[in-house]
Image 1 (tube, rainbow, N blue to C red):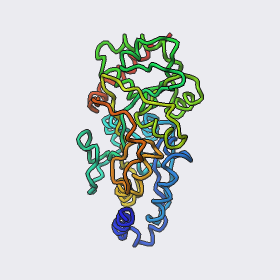
Image 2 (image 1 turned 90 degrees about the vertical axis):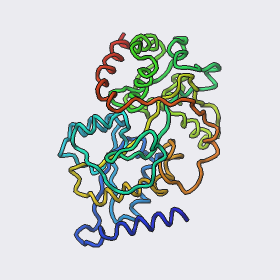
Image 3 (image 1 turned 180 degrees about the horizontal axis):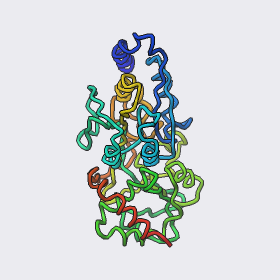
Image 4 (image 1 turned 60 degrees about the horizontal axis):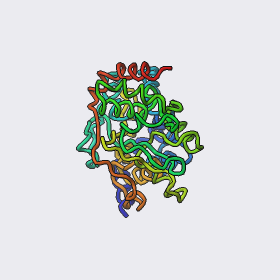
Length: 335
């Protein structure tokens, strides 16, 4: 019932838009990351739900990961075909603002579940989750209980990471190391490098290698075990709870100044915070929803670890230091 009422309200908001025959069947182009648009991701059902009420076509354009989204926008500049970018996170918004490609959205939205961590008129949060090291319980009986144990653990127990230059999880882990180790982050990276099997461009490649058994650990999210419990009916893959706390990722979407479909784009942002979008997040994107859902989260989410402390550096700190911190990582892990 809540979904129906929300849909009716959204439809009413669009009446003025569709009344003009010249705007019949427009196309809304949204750049995002490839796991979002995959057959098993939330994108296909979100497209169906939105197109059923918008009198439009939703066109997903995907790249490997969130950092790659920003890199593509920088290359395309004002000539970008995107109306909306969905898949940046709070670690990238300061840099995204510097491109001057985005504009404030300025629409009324329900209060986000992450409002104490993030609020912006230009980048709206649609989901969130703390990062975590996921381990294979059949290959690792004593997982690390802290980031320090991970850094200093045995070299024969490998971990798969993502590249902070192209991947938001990769950047998130870089910031996690920096938040915990500060000026000694380079030393921590050098020690950890013994345990790194490989560094992939994005999350999908890394997690795929992990589930194929290439390594007993991978960087992912505290929510990842829910996928295995729900879809595969197994408790084999679990998240290690770290005593120092876990770095939080908040994913956001923004509106491009160059968009020729701004009214439709703003309608999508309203839809994004409704059940038609948010219901797909927990069991398709495997994150916590930031907006309204029509029903409680599956019971398996109650079994996930609950970090006692969440870490999050300010967007300004990340923008000011990202290049130096990436260089520090490259220097420390080069062989």
